[in-house]
Image 1 (tube, rainbow, N blue to C red):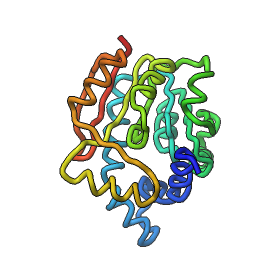
Image 2 (cartoon, one colour):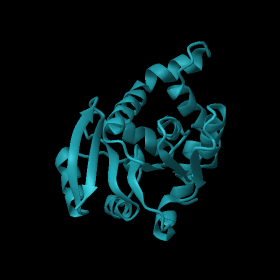
Image 3 (tube, rainbow, N blue to C red):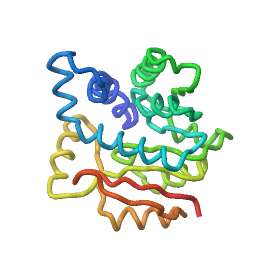
Length: 217
């Protein structure tokens, strides 16, 4: 079993977890309450991102690793032309279900594909690409950063922040056959500049996540 398949299976099993974590419903039982509390940082990153994007008003957005589609739905609701891409069928199914339930399925597109393969073939260009949670698992960060430049003029990307507690996440991923990554701020800045990006905005959301908005130089 290759690494990509392992990651896809990991997320296939967690599609419901992500749906519960992002749900705004308050009466769906223990699991709903647990994931909304335990995965609170995901919701904070989501709110921060949507509020930030409202200020820069992109017209055409690609959500790389779109998961259950919460970003896709929120951006489509704002009138933005948005495409969600994910390599996990269960995640794409959840995204399409959310769009249909929200009455937005005619205002957004979803693609089931391996991102690197797709990005090497597509001719579509976007104002902005979202890569929220993508860099947590990729083995070759420079290759992914270079690919972002091919598909979008600007990118919002998150990186797990290296800390004294990073080993806990690393151990959890290893138990599932996945290698996770974490970064220091200076490592991220070096990677982004080497890839040819200008850093527009760089912040930390909780101790766990660096959130960065960059533009092609």
